[in-house]
Image: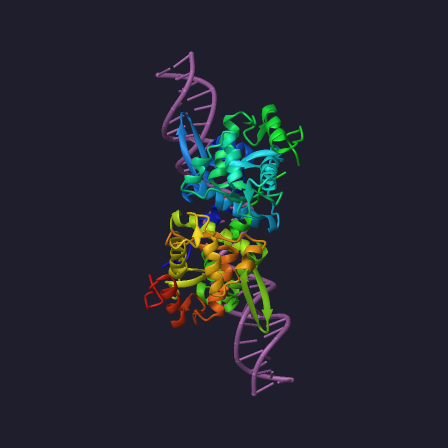
Length: 234
Length: 234
DNA sequence: GGGACATTTCGGCGTCCACCGAAGCGTTCC
DNA sequence: GGAACGCTTCGGTGGACGCCGAAATGTCCC
């Protein structure tokens, strides 16, 4: 009953700068071809290929072939969740010789954290909803009746989220802001709605999101959130 | 804002069998001297010392000197939480050449998972409380009013748990049972109460718990849980 | 079919590191 | 003080692995 866990495979998968970078790039839930990942991490295509094999073998990443490209993405929600909680630890760890690529040094103020809104947009929304009584609890972020009504009004599939097998709400700790934002089934539903409604669009670089004018208007009028213009912050 | 995370230090810390074993041994929240850890992992004292240095540098483990012993323990709640969620991944990972020690091949049916009850006892209690309406939700395990009353009656510091900074309740996935059990501030308070009241005692080997006769009686009469005699299961 | 392109496989190089035994350091106990 | 003990540091060794360029594989497009 409940034997020891072998962390070695997962640990080894995380233990090199290039692989760590790959996972960071995939944390927004996107699929990316091997070449793009190689370029972003600053390693040769062959090296990247080897790294990706390790990540797939460790069960962290899956691969989908499409034409002459092979798209890699996180293997699932559990992987994203585990990396989130691991990110909290990584914070206090001494910074090793991790050579960042010059590109993507900063992330957009709004972005996806696997499947839910994060960054400034994510934490602002969560703060506003806690303040207005749509979400309850310091860390649980439980959905209140008022919240269900309000979110339903803007087209979020609240009922689907509530009856989903996964947890309805979950607090995801934003890596640098150290403040929680909404994750879980409801967070995912809200993310989908923001994308479908055109309130946010994926940034051309693939990382991060741009908040559109209509999205900007919505968050200001509905919840009093005033976002800075420049989408990129640091 | 929200830069990339460097997983390399944490990953490297997890990437060897001996260190993985150390962390498993410390997951029950105990402090152990270096020598005991070395013996359990089957490595020399000097090797163990080097491993422990890596774990401390990575921020996963802390060290407390006492006399000529040095006691190592997990660095905090976040570490235990992260390892828990990582354990879910480790499950699906291929088993590498991890040489288990013959001792501690099986864990006790009742044990601590860092600071809350786990194993058969933990999941049985959680199941019973969900069934009787003390806890609500498939994964949230939110405390109901009835649950607050009931737990208060058996001496659990419910109010302390509710007002704690950390999440009151959290579901912790049991590694092999793949079923959730109660964690968070309330889980911790319940664990403390079970220990203080003498319903469970730490097993002499340090791993796992023995349920005492009074504890056995309590869970049977209060919640209809019938525990097998032999504390050790497989 | 042939050439361009994306990716993987292969061979080789250099470095890192897990491991041990021996020696060093600090504590305990007589 | 001196011996026993717990632990860490040091030196050395062997294997693992991150890296690359070159060659091989597979796909697309003409």
